[in-house]
Structures are given as structure tokens and as C-alpha cells.
Image (cartoon, rainbow, N blue to C red; front, side, top):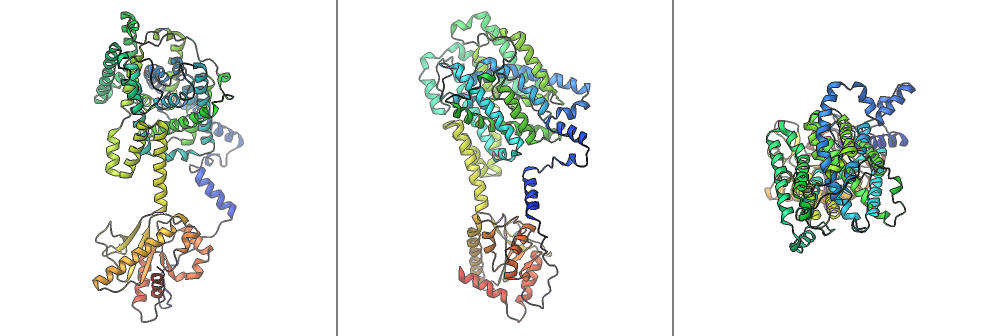
Amino acid sequence: MGNADYECPHRVEIPPSKPFLKALKSSLKETFFPDDPFKQFKNQPTSRKLVLGLQHFVPILEWAPRYTFDFFKSDLIAGITIASLAVPQGISYANLANLPPILGLYSSFVPPLVYAMLGSSKDLAVGTVAVASLLISSMLGKVVSPTENPKLYVQLALTSTFFAGAFQASLGLLRLGFVVDFLSHATIVGFMGGAATVVCLQQLKGVLGLVHFTHETDLISVMKSIFSQEHQWRWESAVLGCCFLFFLLLTRYFSKRRPAFFWINAMAPLCSVILGSILVYVTHAEKHGVQVIGHLKKGLNPPSVSELAFGSPYLTTAIKTGIITGVIGLAEGVAVGRSFAAFKNYHIDGNKEMIAFGMMNIAGSCTSCYLTAGPFSRTAVNFNAGCKTAVSNIVMATAVMFTLLFLTPLFHYTPLVVLSAIIMAAMLGLIDYEAVIHLWKVDKVDCIVCLGAFVGVVFGSVEIGLVIAVTVSMLRLLLFVARPRTFTLGNIPNSSIYRSIDQYPDANNIPGILILQIDAPIYFANANYLRERISRWIYEEEDKLKSSGETSLHYVILDLSTVGSIDTSGISMLEELVLANPRSEVIKKLEKSKFIEKIGQEWIYVTVGEAVSACNFMLHTCKPNPGEIEVNRKDDNV
């Protein structure tokens, strides 16, 4: 410490510098390839590399050779079970998107087949999702009326699906999966809860039998639309809707209480469609204000490449809708897939999932399908039904294919109010108030993010809610970087350990020495703040020492163990401080900037304990104290 009589036990070593290109390559690898996907290709012959490459991009080639008949029996049961849910949900969500109901069935045929080949999740069940359906309805409905110009509206929906798929696949191919991570858990909970509330409110149109309804999704507009048409409410439709909603909620409650009977909840939507259709057919309720689906044409998905409206004047809206719905679909699908993968203790590759989602939506847009993802309700049923692999999606698609070929005329008398009840029952399960309470207990800021997303969706629009949630999350991230926390450290009695005094009140202050720790990297964005914050710590410590009559402050030790990196702006604020435990990247920057040469190696220590020992040695020697002069100079400057 500026005195030859003190011998430092350990010297802080400076790691050897790497060539720029090698360092850049290492940094890019850590950023885009943290899972090291190329490891399996090392030291392999060309033919084996080709096989491994195909297995990497088409996962079914990797696990199909190990597939067994026992797996098939489980997947067959799960596939048939989720097909019973996929058919009514597909029709319902297409109706929510203001698209022809048959598109909902088409969307449960081709995309699941594509996902089964390319997806890495064993449990994810592919299909249409309510939030994306609502987004398509609200965003495209503002520029094109689905009733006045249905053909163009369908074309724009297919075009937005194509761009959603292209965007999703691009993220996966470019290894940009971390982009979706900016949608935090709190954001998704609030956004999904708000969207579910809006979807439920939108279904009051079907429950009350209204023909005309607002295209806006906010609470006030929906309520105005409902109560301005009181004279058009249909009590027959309302009674039927309430009865089926009660039935669906009752079956879900029973299945939760008795998990072994999960299939009752899974079969309830299809049973509701069958019962509703029979009731309407027998009573001729369609003549008394109960709206029905009407004719559904038989046959498999017709090609729709020629329907993609790349030359439409509304192409910008289609692209915007595609990107937003693509992000939401990815966030929900990847989150759901990871959640259920954790239950079975296996890993899913986020980038592979993005490629799989993208390719199934691109293929879907060319085969009369609109946007699909991995809905939670369908995946939960698939999981509870005991699925083993993605073959359950193939079984589901086969069942939907059979429906398209032979059973679509049976849905003619299906009442729209039953579809509304199915959607409302599914959406009520997405309003997770328990998660909000948990967020409030654990992290108040996270809870504010969640509520911000919810309020933005319910009182603004789905897009506004998403923007609010992402903006608040980004602001929180920026504040964490720009205003990092600083702590005073003390010595835990009878040890050489130094920890935060706030966390360990029994930790002792060292007379004449202030020990600080910064809990973040030091960048230009926070360098001035940290300089001011450290000055304030010094002032406060000096005042406290003066008031207690103790010795004055002589040294300030800065523990850099939690500082992962630093830039040139941050380096300048370290002058006149004793440094302890600098990490590899930090000490390299200090050496390259000539900072160590300027202040001297003797001011940098491996541990806080060694820094304290050195400072104590200087305090108890009779020789001039250069360290004390430096600290006082710092005090004069501030």
C-alpha cells in the first residue's frame, strides 16, 4: 500500500490478452450459441455430420428410431383427447378472429404435422390461440371490414400469418431467441389476463345474440356497444349461453379436484357443441334469435399461396399484425413448452421452437390456416392425457382430417353462443389472480409491470397493453443498469468474511475504513451516479464518525467482485479508491487503459480482507500515509 514494509500476500494477476478476432469470436459464441450446438459435429466424418445436421433441424429424425408401441398407445389416447378439444376450439377461435369457422379446423390439421417434425417439445399441442385471434380481429378489422369485404379480410389474415411465420423462423435461424425473453413472466401474466378479460367481454356479443358489435376491444367501447343495444338482447341466447358456461366451468372445477378425471374437462367443449347442435335442431332455435354456424364445406385445406396479398395497399398493417401476433405466439408457446418440459425434466431448444413455429405458420399460410401457436389449455390436456412424444399432434391432425372429410355438415346447427361459452370458459382460466398476489408479495415492481399490462389491454387495446408492459420492463432494466445498488460491507465476527451490513447487522465496521460494493457493471450510464453515490457514502461516514467522536475516515475500499465489466467512463471513477477482487474483464481493461500504472499495483488486492489488512498496516505505521492523502483529495473535490 505505498509502503515497502507491507508485503501483499497475493498479487492480482492480469489475464493474457487475446487477439481481437479470437475475443470477438468468443463473445459472439457466448451471445448466439450458449448451448454450443456445434459440439456434436466435432471429430465426426462427413456422412455422420450430415445425419446430425438433419437431426438437429428435423428433431423427429432423432427420436423416431427409438419410438415404441407403448409410446404410440399413450400418444394415441392423448391425440384423440386433444382432438376433441381442438375441433370446438378451432371453430370458436376462428369465429373470434372474424374468420370463416372452417379456417379454425384447417389450422388444426397442417400446422400440427409440421410441428411434430420440427418441434423439440414432447408435450406442446399446437393450435389456434385466443389472444392472437383477438389481435387479428382488432388490428385487421380497423382497416378492412370482415362483413363488407370478407375475401380481402381473409387474405390479409393469411398474409399476416405468413409474415408472423417468417419473423419467427428468422429469429430462430439468427439465434435471436433472447429477444422473446424481454417479455418477462410478469408481463405475460398481466398481458394474458387483460387479453382474456377483453376476449370474455367480446363474447357477450354471442351470448346476448347481438348482430352488430364494436370492433374496439377496450372495456368502455364494449360496454357502450352492449348497453346501447338493450332492445336487441335475446333472452333465449343468453339463457343457453349461461347454462353451457356453467356446465364448462363445473367440469373444469371437477377435473381440478379429481385430476384422474381430466378427460371430463377435455371432452366438455365437444359435448357442449353436440348438445347445443341437437338442441337447436330439435327446437328450431335458429328461428328464435339463436345464431348458428351454418354450412361448413367438406374437404381438406385448399392451397392459398395465391391468396397472400403481397400487393395489397394494407400490406403494412398485415406485416405489423404478423410481427405482433408472432411475438405473442412465440412468448406463449415457448413459455408453455418450457413449463411442461420442466415437469418431465427435459430441455427444449428455444431457437428450434422458433424455427418450428415459423415453418408451421409459413406452411399454414399457404394452406388456408391462420396463426397457430402452443395454447396452454390444449397443452395441459395433452400432458395430463399422458402423451410421450409429438406424435400426439399427428394423431390430433389425423382426427381433424377425418372431421374435415366426413363430419363438417354436422356442425351446421352449432349455436354461436356455445362457441362463446367455450371461449369464455377457456379465457377465465388465463386470469391468474393468484400469480398477481404472488408478484405483489415477492416484487412490487414486477406486480406494477403486470398490472400496467392488464390495465393497458383492458382500457386501451391489446397493442397498447403490450407496449406498456414492454416499456415498463425496459425502463426497469435501464434503471437497474443506470442506478445500481451500492452496499457498505462489514466484517462478520470471528472470520475474514465481509458482507453487507444491511443483510448482516452483526457485521463490524472497520475503524477509519469504508468498504463498498457495487452490484452491477460500471458503464457510462451509471459512472456519474456511482461517483456521486460513493461521495455521499463518504460524507455520511465522516459525519457519523465525527458525531461519535471516533477516528476520521482514511480509506475507501471498493469491492469489485460483482462488477462483471467496465468501460472507459467507469474506469475514471475508480481513482483514489482501494480496489479489491477485480474480475478478469475488469482488470484487463484497467491494465490496457494504463490505470494500474497510474495508481500503482499496490492499490489493488485479491480480497477485501487483504485490502483491509494493508490499510490497517498503513494506519498503524508512523510513516507518511499516501493513501490518506488521496482520500482527502477526493473529499476536497466533492
